[in-house]
Image 1: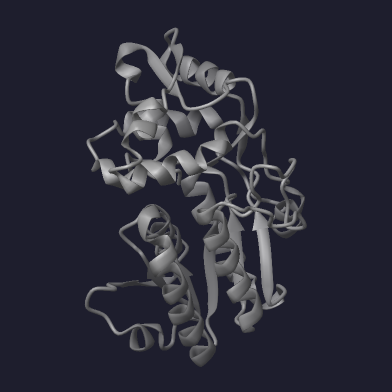
Image 2 (image 1 turned 180 degrees about the horizontal axis):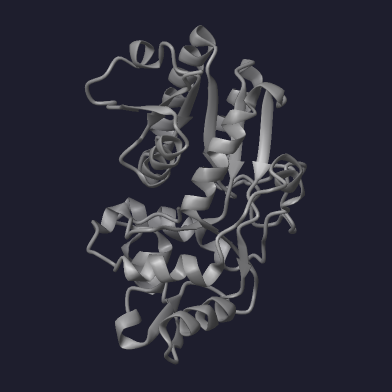
Length: 298
């Protein structure tokens, strides 16, 4: 039986990885161009819609609610299941770990509230929705996230820049693994609740553990240096993105990890990529130049 997925945001991190994973699993993949396409027409006949649209932080408050309603309306018309790449922003700075599908969404900051409202809209819509929630991505190629833009940007000089407390756990996820999991969840969508929140356990690492793993991969001793937020604080009055990056910096101060019990229940045979294997691919791809404004925590 033919299976069709429509990817929204196919040129972005999750969208690109999801398109590859669905194609490898034998699905017919449609990539949607928001600049020129008709969403309702593109979605007709699609079994699954992957909503990987991710505007710049500075545009979230203005754009995310409208984009969410467009996807909900089309999914209501077509009966498609929507898969949303969730993040940990909804939990907020004061929420103790572990974070699971039962953890209250207590974020009070602006970006966290946008994500809370987005997920609430899907939950209330009646559209079959799968939120696959992950920590910071480690990507197979340079894509302007914290890992390639900041942490390993000076790896050739033997330095790992860490943007927070290196002694507390932080949630990471190998993006190709998250995309594979999205496919497997899509294939059992009919048996899932109408709204399904699935935390992706990924890798839980302190900064020092991450540096140690990178040292094993590179075969050299690496120096951990703390990333300075001072330039971002100084730029806040003139660069809106700086304000957003500082706003989300609590994730590097708050110990957190994702509870994988629900994931294990739904995908008991899932094989996670070994950390060192993922890091080898990530740093082997290099850290190509990306626009400064493209840097986000995901």
